[in-house]
Length: 529
Image (cartoon, rainbow, N blue to C red; front, side):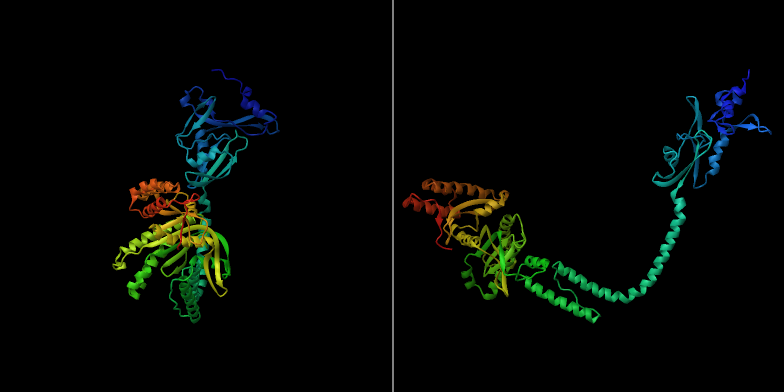
């Protein structure tokens, strides 16, 4: 087989050229020129290095070419690898030059030989994905450090070394842990004596701080005052006396009011402000005659149980219990704590009071006494609310025309045979949350202007029967206002047992016998409270 002139090959002409003279030039992976007669699968893969050489007189003597088998190149990264570090050889495009495993396949890709690893560890795959970038990387949930170093005069080859970051920081972390442990031991030794000395003081002061913290949160429950330190015991005794005073005071005034004064760090000042309130007045029907029949101790116990239930109903909706007037109760909502839904809260409180008192009368605690009938009046108006009285004896209460109207609604319940009457202002403010029945247009005693008064029936889904009666009654009331007294009587006959229906029927019969004047507007003028 003819052999060409070797000086015509690129390995000679490029190496001997002026640009590369004296520089070692590495080739890429290639088939060995010595195995040209063999089949491809039997030919060896080599990497050659060629360099121009000189003779003893420094004249160009030729090109020296050395070939290295791939198994020699493959062994170089493995010699650099350790149990911790893993070395590999790749080019600038991330293609492997040395096999990771002796069994990795080498095959042509176009005109170039390439290595096809059977398995690439995730850390090496992550490194060659960013070839040339040394630094930290994360693979398989583990932090690694990778370093690349280029090989001069090669085809852009690089040696990469990747190792777990923990391998380099393990000793440092161990040193840190030993230092921290030693430091903690020293600190523990220093603090141990102080802790033993201050333990009792800290415990005593801690109890004082805990008590004062709970007092800031308006928790005035009694706590033990004992302490081996006399000064702390005296402080605790003073705190407990103060808590006893506050517990006693909270039975007379609104806790919310005291809380607001505490938050503002001020004492109550004589005066008030205009605020829209929803007000409730209640009274027990026939309480005077009942008190005459019962022994004083029995009466006191029964009244206490009754007022407890009423108070729970008011407080369940964050209402302010203004005062007890014998068996009567005055309460209001939207002061001192503001609520946009104060009218709804007032109506909820009425229904809750009615439910709680019914449960009381059915319980063994009532001891067989006859159930009481409570009348409620509710009105929403803008009134004065604040601290009124003498400078050294104040009462937090509400004053104004709206308060008087709310007080007048309660006794009207007796005239109509209902348990609760609500003003139109309250009905409008509840925005459909409850079912009401229009009972009448009334000018209460002491008032010239009339108001529409309603009976609070309950929440709509729980009072279907009352709503049917209400529709019949309101139809009759509309006929009454239109001077159709006979038509009103016909409708009222369907609900003859209803309290307001009986009152309106009697009034219609009177109107038929003695017709009202032409300027009659349907307003009923109440002549008594």
